[in-house]
Length: 133
Image (cartoon, rainbow, N blue to C red; front, side, top):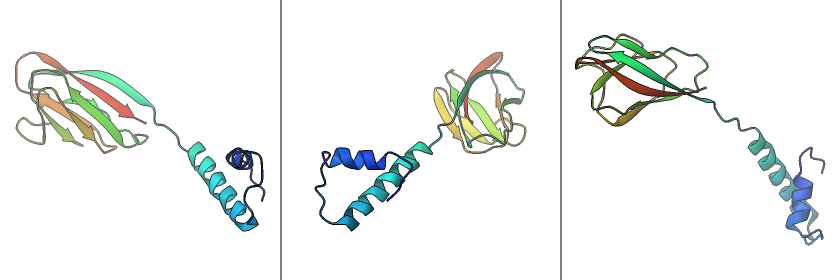
């Protein structure tokens, strides 16, 4: 059986360099499985994780995560503050509506749309955003 990966070498390592299998069909199946596993493993592409710290001003809806067609889709929004935020997907954030984000919690976004945030206390606060593309 011909395979473009290292399945033959792996099979030889498993067999200790000797043909311990007596059934040729069984050896062929083992080679096919090893080859498929090597090809499947090498095809895995790890996403790139892009961190960002976004400043949110009191009472204003701020885009914390822009729309991105290349997003896996997965992003993590982390609230490391003592403030409570409200998140909205695909539209402006409104106080007491949408997705609540309590102090010292996180929210996993599973969309390619933009995400906006708002909070009610005076001043500014920061959200840490990690986007996977």
